[in-house]
Image 1 (cartoon, helix red, strand yellow):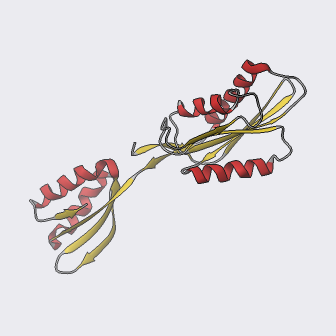
Image 2 (cartoon, helix red, strand yellow):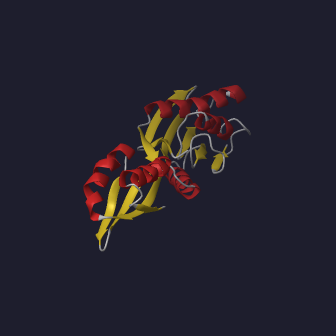
Length: 201
């Protein structure tokens, strides 16, 4: 996927279930390293908590190439896996979530834990501000001076802009464009100039 929603900022929600306090913090995590740094930060902030369970998806929504999860001492499969399942089905990428639990003395049982941890993630996602991540491509094109204005007029239709422009025997443009539109823009530049603009992808 070359464009997808990601967290725009950190979000934290909290709830008490049978006297146990659950604090869910969600954050952007474009890489495994960023996710692990965030998890370490949460563990330091809530060092006195009973559990700091986590899940992350570093990459496009639903992608399983860079994922992680931990039950952090809760019974196996009751925290990390249900949290990860919510993230993978959320349609949001580059995200890490830590659910911190302060045990209140009453056991929730396997089903209760699954509901508490997955529910915390769902609540955080509802409150989460998102923005669009767009993978960008860089094109270098060269052509006669008379195309400076026509090229400038063409680019907005492709969500593209000139990052740099050099004037020598010809004009050389360095153009930044969303990856998914690079091929169409290349064709449009050639058509616009009837082949006089040469594009080097």
